[in-house]
Length: 85
Image 1 (tube, helix red, strand yellow):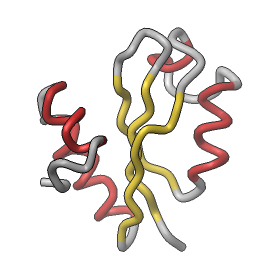
Image 2 (spheres, helix red, strand yellow):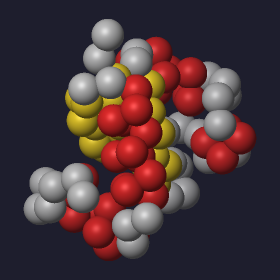
Image 3 (cartoon, one colour):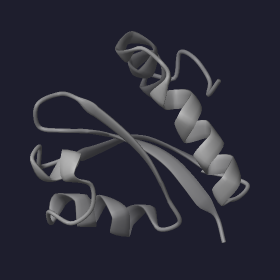
């Protein structure tokens, strides 16, 4: 089963990074008010970037690396200017 690391943009322009094994369902859940408290208060969210990974542990490592990036670096990642660290 594939796992994904993803970035959604919230209504207020902030970026949220997470992992899932069902990307469409996860984005729909975020917009339905289910899931992370952070995104519940900032709906709707829009998928800006995703990357299919080898498995859950790989996705979690990439999520951690992305969360350490600056806002500018995350925007460059979303734009395709840089790759996942």
